[in-house]
Image (tube, rainbow, N blue to C red; front, side, top):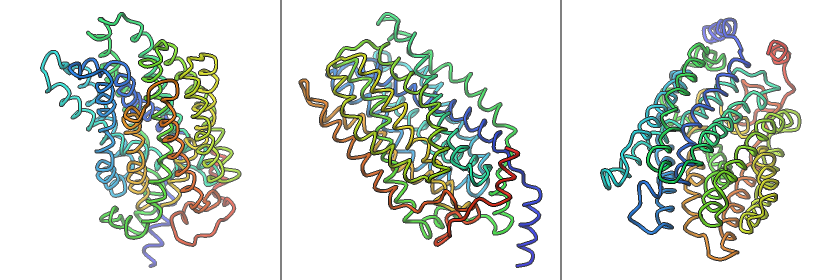
Length: 458
């Protein structure tokens, strides 16, 4: 006992909190990672049906293209187990380096793939393989970055600093969409011949930037102190499901709120362009503006949750999104451009950002340090799986005529309501000290003096 205490004290004396550096590294890394991930979604909505499935009916080709978008979510739970184990046993930094390199490789390779007209059925098969590798990478990226920022942050600002991971995700989507705006303006033959490849090939540059930023980031104090005091978990996944099963299930169902994001950014893009015939550039501009607003809204919602709690802010975002998807899809069905802009920005940029900005803290604070990365990675990826296949499901249930969008809106609302109910059942943790997170029965407490000092140096 004495030796454990002395080791813990020694670790505490040498470990240093770097909340700003951790937040910056997570922001840039997530932007790079999700630039790669989101350009696939945009390409699936706009060109992959024609390039990789030209021999089938156009509506079925869209379903197939969305299915290749969704297959990444099959390997994400498997990647979460693998990368969660690495992150909880060997450190957060190793996971963040591995995910960045794997995502960069698979994305660049998509950019050089031959199409169906060149090699037949081998083309969509190779596309699926690369997408599966993207899924493995994405499984560990957000959980690793969230763990890194959460464990560097002062207690009373954990949501604010972890929100930078999601701001980085939004920045990646903005960058991916901005790259596609001039590309989508190319003549159809040039877009399909070579233009679609450019965003994928550019991933080599953005990955190099992200790797350079992350290379000097230190391991988190909480991980080092916990490893010194208690030792590392031999099998984090076994410990997770032995001691934290209820928390994992809560994260799975709360993560269904991601359906809102993929419906908004992928399905409605295809629906508006291919069914309603709204110009591609118009819908891509809606995505950019909504995500620009989200860049500011996410840290503001997170700051509010540091003051009033995680649950009320998350639930507001989930239920508000469940309501707003109806007028937004109606506006799309009527091609009402001013309403599309107004409601799209309100839905995705403002209201959904409440849930999106708070979930890194809400989920991460359900687990202790020994299994935090595994818990977040596995729980979110199982929940995100429905989000990943949401565009495929929506394309299949989309009706005909002016009210054909109603089943899609109802599906989105159902997923968001389930996520709100799951969050409501969780313990409120915004006043629980870091050392007591994930411990059953841990009482809430005011931020400690050490937390306050950490905030002053942040």
